[in-house]
Length: 274
Length: 260
Image 1 (cartoon, one colour):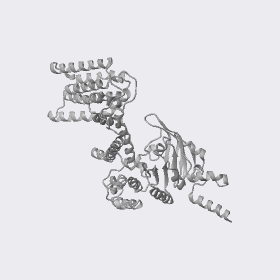
Image 2 (tube, rainbow over the protein chains, first blue to last red):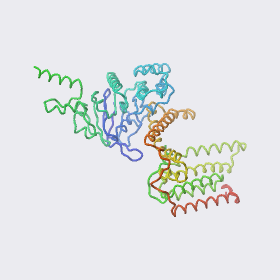
Image 3 (cartoon, chains in turn orange, cyan):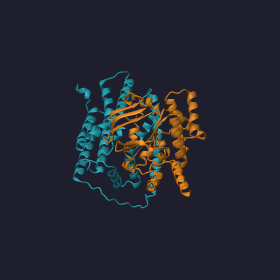
Image 4 (cartoon, rainbow over the protein chains, first blue to last red):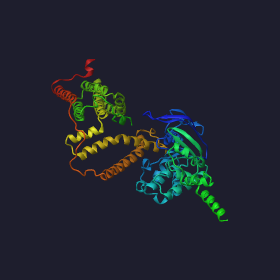
């Protein structure tokens, strides 16, 4: 469980990035944090594994304050995948890259081997096992970065902009993968601008603006509320835009799921053809 | 990354900021030469204190102190190595003179950091480029130099992100003995170098697509002109150089310990 109590954070250059944020994320929840550039999203999630410590207020991970623990100790339970994979890749082979964190955490060599194979398989990277990560494409490098965090099987996973630079197929794989993690009761927190991606996943959505939380609720509610979205410079997902227009003909407004939209439209068609 | 903060230019209005960068550069080079000329502590102390009026006139005390703090590690290293070598070279004895010469070597380094820090803190990268160009240095070199200077803060920020990313994967920089600690920096240096190279290639492509170097002869909106303040600084600089050379050749400098 992640709890933050009225946290404030100022960077050394005196810019106040967080102005009193209180939030509780329960185990097994899937949360998307959205908001315009500079809203404090990345600063906020960097508090979850202790990379940043609040200037005031408290962040507790499973009841333990982050100020009382090292980043390495917190990272064991909270995996953080950075936006740009090039900020972390350094090994000669993909295999070694994935093993890096496992060795840092002191896993037995046999376990390291097993976990690496598991993670490579999970993200369909097995064929690149002995390849240099620098020779891979952007999307593949991103998957290596993800695999290198998943390998130690953290309880909570933080994904900073996971969909940037990914084609539709990879995004879909990522979505399925997140759903799979959900069934394993993992907590997933993602920071993203990708409103269509969030609409497809339908998680709990938190909107941030100028260092504060301005809205918090289920995706279906928040993503179909133009007034709330406008606060964070986000536009409605395309399906919600269509249903906003169709609401004049008696359709519900709060539709973000493509299958639900299809069912509703087919029902109407049937009613009319009778 | 505090040493980088001590070199980052900030726009301030001060008599030092307004000086011609060429003259400031000559001043820094003269300080550099003088610091190399002497290995006794007294002239180096004088050099050290000579810079303070510049620091205060330019209102950059805070950043200047930060750059000195950033240099503290290397300074300590220089001091220790000097002490140890003189200790072993002089049959395991440690005299006051030895300590003093080690301190002088350290101070020499500090003076260099100090003067370069004042120069970079008070000279905007644009001015620097202009100065290089108007000193007849080919534009390609002038551009490469100013770009390098301008990207220092960008790289410092990137280094911080990389450190965060590796810490999030359980890397503990402060763990282990000295060798292990140096090895700990490999996961930070490699991504940093790779991304710097990648960035430079991207920059080159972006510049070429904006017709960089299409025209042989370039003109500038601003021209550097020498003002009275610049001439005063130039006179002081040449004076310092003349006195230093004279003292170095004809005056025997006492050691600090000879006074006690």
